[in-house]
Amino acid sequence: MIRDDTVEGFLDSVASRTPTPGGGSVAAIAAATGAALVAMVARLTMGREGFEAVEPRMAEIEERADAERAVLLELADRDAEAFEAVMEAFALPKRSDDEKAARSMAIQAAFVGAADVPMEVARRAVELLGLALETVSTGNPDAASDGASGAAMLHAAVLCATSNVDINAASLKDAQAASALRTSAEDLRGRADELIDRARDAFRERTS
Amino acid sequence: MIRDDTVEGFLDSVASRTPTPGGGSVAAIAAATGAALVAMVARLTMGREGFEAVEPRMAEIEERADAERAVLLELADRDAEAFEAVMEAFALPKRSDDEKAARSMAIQAAFVGAADVPMEVARRAVELLGLALETVSTGNPDAASDGASGAAMLHAAVLCATSNVDINAASLKDAQAASALRTSAEDLRGRADELIDRARDAFRERTS
Picture (cartoon, each protein chain N blue to C red):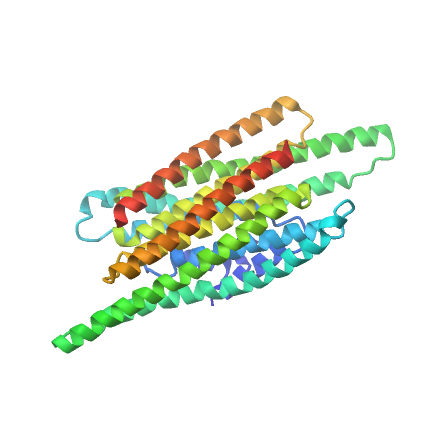
């Protein structure tokens, strides 16, 4: 499991000459890191004088971000597994026409599966990015840079995840399915771009 | 050392109700992750048929990205240490006027130190972002999503690091020093924004 690797060991396996873990697993870890920063700001806001009004909301954000972090750490491994399924499908025999057809179908199904995990990561990261914006705007201003950093990690997670959706979509023969994936990815990127701009503005306002 | 923590353990300490590790350490880890992805694409390009012309350059990029990754992993710890020095300065005695003056000077010096590490992380991340763009444009297109993910992580690293520069600059009484830090941070962010846009365009071109 990636979560049990050391930070250095995980980065060694990313850097190595094997296709997994790669950008897909990094997307999930980046989103989990963003979730950790969001939870940190919520914790540094709760119980602080002057922030009584936002305390119940910060408690909700803390709980939600902690739960998402656990799910995202699992998705980091699921991404690598989904990509390994693609490579296993490519390794299927292709001596007869039947075998070729079965192999081709297996490859296509594996690519659909490989696009699924990053799509889920991107969706979760966009939701968390909204919470990061909220912590920057209404949380403890001493931790505004942590909230802004959380927003940046979540935006990067969406970019990493949707790049992985797009590259898997590009391998699909079903043009309609490929186009639907690309459209969803583009929509999530658009939402993430808008939210990171708002988080950057909110950070500037809180520290100027 | 953060690099010896497990991925889960590191994220637990980020999420916890203590100011370190926070966005500053995350900036360095995000940059190290970007460097790992850049090195991965270089490795998946070298020795591949059709990419002989870029092989010497990919070897350079691999070596540079690996060296940067090691430095950035160290900077993750140095960031937390620099922030702890700020908290230690705040804890100095302030009974007499002499003590108050000494404490104030120590706090100011510690804030300068705390801005120093993220500034170095941001500078290194911007340089690496240029290499990430290069791997997306000229590297193995099968790994284009990894190069694009590397670019996204390095862009996030610049945003995280410069937010930390800005928040430390906001605590400086020396207005000229604060303004110089903010200007450098803004310049690095501008370069990073331009490079991530180019990397996103290059990725679209390579996968369409």
